[in-house]
Image 1 (cartoon, helix red, strand yellow):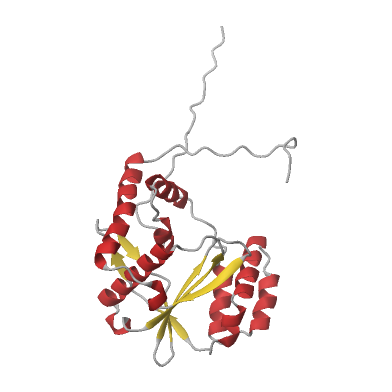
Image 2 (cartoon, rainbow, N blue to C red):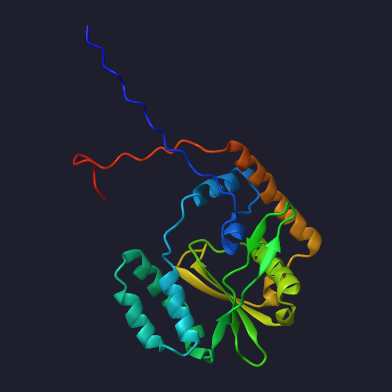
Length: 243
């Protein structure tokens, strides 16, 4: 009788997060449902492609006067990647009134902004830009599919204000332009929104602590799950129906 030796099956395991995702990505995860937060953390293990980088680059060049609006539209339409092109065209189009009316000025990234969560996790507050007006203004860009809720916006503002106070106090009195270009929940495509400190309504310390408690409870549960086996989707065959 012939015996066939089976080769061991190598399972691919996930790599749980040990650091927090980016500033606004982390904020956007905090919802009332703990299971939903855990699922968002699991999704964050696989880094998303930077589909919004061309949109951000065009936006910043326009605000600095390095590019005209019409030239930005042309460049957006010429992007080779379909997803990057679609995002850039939508964002530039939704922001036209703002981009045409803003007075151009130089801007610089604001470095060394950190925020420490109640359990000691560190959140890097970036990218934040300093617009060199007189007086200076801060700039935050949120280009995404889903808009932040008012509570998430207020938490993001409180975190930014705390980080400025602790790390860059000379800029803590600056007004902020928090720009959001996401899809409207009412439909009709992307919607441009410009928030200042008054519209953002930063949470007070007690409210911010409660905001993070939801996230930290989910984070602890997520860490207890540990590595999981990654199940790859089956590749499409010739007999699969194509869209």
